[in-house]
Image 1 (cartoon, rainbow, N blue to C red):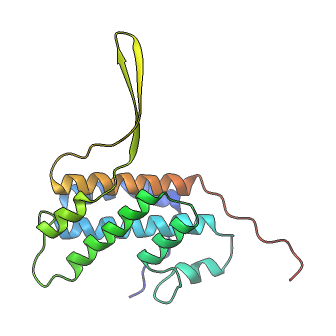
Image 2: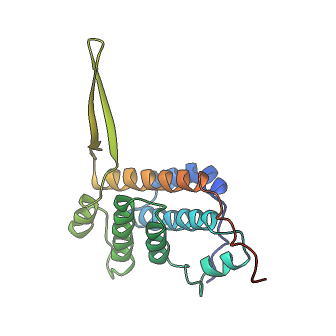
Length: 185
């Protein structure tokens, strides 16, 4: 089955509201599969934006035979190129494990199952800089991990949305690499 061409980062960003609806209203299976698929396309869009402009890029990214057509390959490369931080990379790996647990279960599995709950609990939350104002005095606490609360599904959705936003923001701020100097034309 051939997937649709890799959309531009701007298109993915514009469509992100639809992702939020899916995460909030679909079954657990739908939620996990769509979130993972969206992250996969966001990774592909980021890589596409980073690479030199070339007709070779779709060949690399498009399934079924593209060298970078899988979620894992795209995650690995985005991390190795320094396009994403280690915590985001680890979360991409964890979401891949969650998707695989759903895909390879012969019975219905839910986000609240023990196996999935453990994976969700292993997410690396983003680091936030906290500033506290008390009686007009500003106190900086410095970087702190974001506290994830709510149900397992709430925590999965929050991390998935933050990951999508981070990938899209990175993609929007990424420029194509310059092609190598001429001389071998």
